[in-house]
Image (cartoon, rainbow, N blue to C red; front, side, top):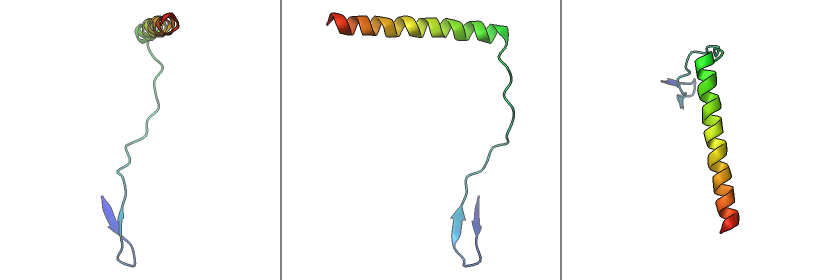
Length: 54
């Protein structure tokens, strides 16, 4: 989308998406997030321990 101002200069504007409110995650999503957090914590801990061992 573009517009031209009074001086004839071209202005490019990004198209703005519609705004909506986020919904609270369902219990299933909360369990999935907790599982992903546990895996990420385990992975980072393994990386740090490997770095200290090297």
